[in-house]
Image (cartoon, rainbow, N blue to C red; front, side, top):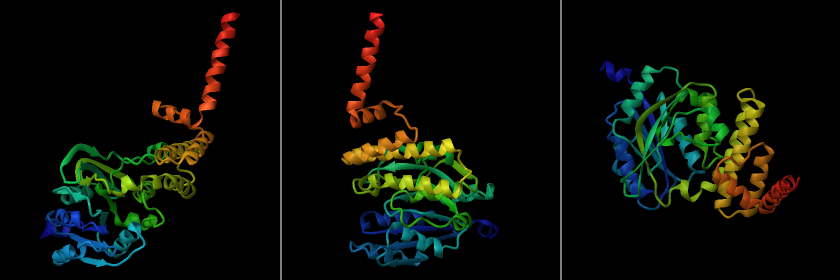
Amino acid sequence: MQDLISQPKISIITPSFNQAQYLEETILSVLNQDYPALEFFIFDGGSTDGSVEIIKKYEAWITYWESKPDRGQSHAINKGFQMASGEIVVWLNSDDLLAPGALTTVAQAWQQNPGVGLISGQTEIIDASGQPTGKLFGSEPNVVNSLLSSDNRVSQPSTFFSASAMRYVGFLDETLHMSMDWDIWLRIGAHYPMLFLPKVLSKSRNWEMTKTKTQLVRSGPEHIRIVKNFCKQNPDFLTSFQKRQALGSGYLRKGKLDHAAGKWLLFRLDLLAAVYYGTKPKQRADLKLFKRAFPVFYFLKRAYSFLLRKISAAE
């Protein structure tokens, strides 16, 4: 009884919309944790593919569920955060899975590290059929490094948040559709220590209709806005040079995404903005991108260098 009392309550929120093919597996990955101090919420956006029937099959073990139209994924997750009473909160998308024993692992780390704002681990990437791809994702959260590289290497389904920390910094920004996980852990990391566990806590499905594949280009402008908002809310966290570097990296990342999406004018404007903030192409792929964007400039640069060499040789 003492062990049960001392275990922190964990609240899991699953947003879903027309994901019947994977929803049951997600639900079972939660219920099979065999973790007693658990509450589980499912917010379905009004699915028409049989998802509701799957939820009803397990409703005796679900704390609360509903199926009605919402304003998007972040809105659905925030509804769960507002209802959650756990000390630890996490959202698990309806095509992802918790790894066996994940909740017990997180609870033990939580008790051993009081005061952390979040606990993050690794995620095993699986294919559409649930088979491992041999890839892992997730690394130690570092606010400065992540901002300066405009790169989110923290795995969302393996990140468990302190409920009190989340209430302090505010819930998810519902205007964000792709990068709300990056935004929330940056905001928490600005005020709280963060713990990384080099263990697999979840499995993430890599399939053709996942939002990361179909809507990734939308994350470009979101990253820029997140960096600007972070610097405004935490004016002394980064130096002036680091703020420019963070924005430059953000525009370079946006340029890559716009180029991949065939947005030829936008990607050139993105690269000009990156240069304005002091970002220069360092990797070979970045250099190729700049040459593709500004071929005349690089032609003239090479011609100028060629003439200088000829003049030097003549002298």
